[in-house]
Length: 487
View 1: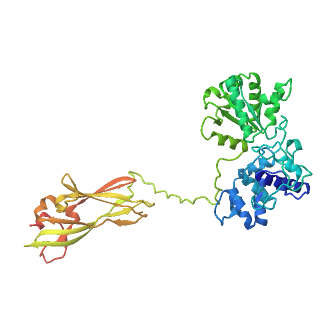
View 2: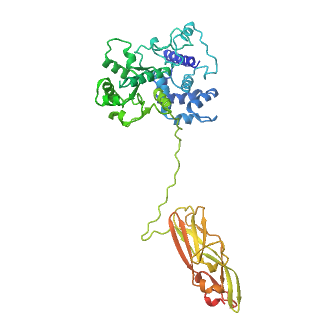
């Protein structure tokens, strides 16, 4: 049984204390000292058989995990549940914590299930099944027999004796603080307390404690209960709020003790409610604190986590290095209007073909590419542009968008443009026909850029942008276009 395995580990721990061979990190354990011991043991005697234990404790699956770095970067709070168990603040802890303890003290055989554990002592066998609760949590070692200590005469296969619930064994108990609002509410609190006991928690409330003695001193009992238990569950209700804020009766006494101690012991007090989180049940001094609504799904597991000091999530260790960032270059300051970072440069134009007769052109075909330059000192993540020109310049523009007698050509750049880099658009073909010379010679080609920085437009005069030699003129010198060059 797992409880027997736990008992043998705790017995071995006590023996090591008695023989003065226990590591100083384990004598008075803290989360930091357990982390240091974990790293020390890993460096000195880590073996292949221990890999499963560390994988389970740290919540990793990789076979070749670098456990040294994992231990160094691990949050010390990861070891707190084991510390609470060793310091007897709780009577039970997760199996993975027990296995880690077995590894730290070099207990053999480990892990649980690697060998069969048998109870051979008649005394031990008499303790099992006689008065022991199957739901009871294992007790930590080092107490008197009435509190669940290891029998000194039992031997290496020791088990814990169940503690007597005599009202004085409160160090790992749970006290329920509540208000006597009405019989229905009181019965529900009693049922809640009994439910916790069936789950292995030594839960107590005033009705249980007053059964154990006559002529009870209630003020003394409340002080002992609030200070003598490792956990205090406060059941909020309208009656509790009213009595707490007026410091009336036993609730007022307990509330005063709680206010004085809750900041010093934030893990000790657990606020719960049977009826949501209404302001009608929360005293002023407890406003803004976490409240477990026991009427909602998932509240049971949250309550267990609070009672056992177990974390809800296992976070990744902090990486050794942070992301590397590149500083953004500051552009030079200039007076006047801010310069647009993308310049629309002079287009690249080439004459492709022409037809002429009698010293004049019938038609001329040009190929044009539009050029853009990144003027900033930072890279630009692409942009889009539009070209507007007279529809007569592109006679076969059947598929292009046309508005106000102009053809609109669109395209974009999706790649990064580096500082001072110039990029060219795809090639567009333009055809100038003599029949349309009155429409295009004096027209304008507009180029507009659209980007994250806004938009910018530049106009080009057609008769200046396109040039050609005089047909049959005997000279190759190019001239700007005029109407007289066409028939």
